[in-house]
Amino acid sequence: MQVRFEEYVAARRPSLLRFATVLTGQTWLAEDLVSDVLGRAYERWGRIGSVAEPHAYVRRMIVNDYVSWHRRLARSRPQADIEPPGAVDDGTHDHAERDAMIRRLDQLPRRQRAAVVLRYYAGLSDTEIAAELGCREVTVRSQISRALATLRLDLTDHPTPYATQER
Image (tube, rainbow, N blue to C red; front, side, top):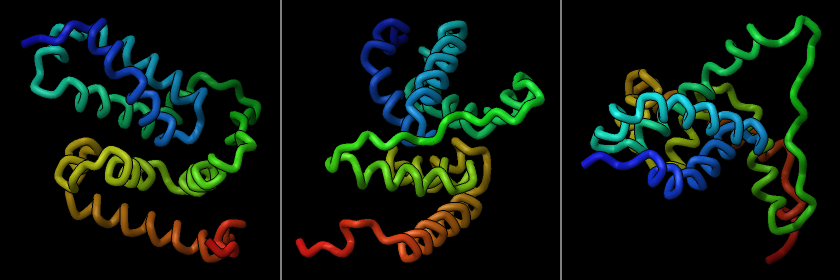
């Protein structure tokens, strides 16, 4: 049964935005990424809406765009080195750990970050991640292992203020 595009967007856009925000670390970039992907998905919804898992298909479109967005940005960006603004701390203690993790994830290479987000945020298996990233399962395990090693090193080098507090 084909899902109508309007119903899909109404039901899944918030989760796509959350997923893209975790993936990119930037709310503005996540919004742009999701809007671009949904625009392209609308054009092809006749085919996408009839697949078994349209959400997985759209999520893969987001991952693919995220991994390759720097190529599009390089083609459209003026020659001056203009970098997008860094992640902005929201200033509340409730979100401090989340912001610190997003900043640490920002330090990972794109494919490692995508693999970690797909594993720990989206809850996908190695097989599913390999299919989303277009690589082998052993590559997924390697990417995740390297990413976790980098994150562990970063955590030991820069402990959060909460690490020293007694609970």
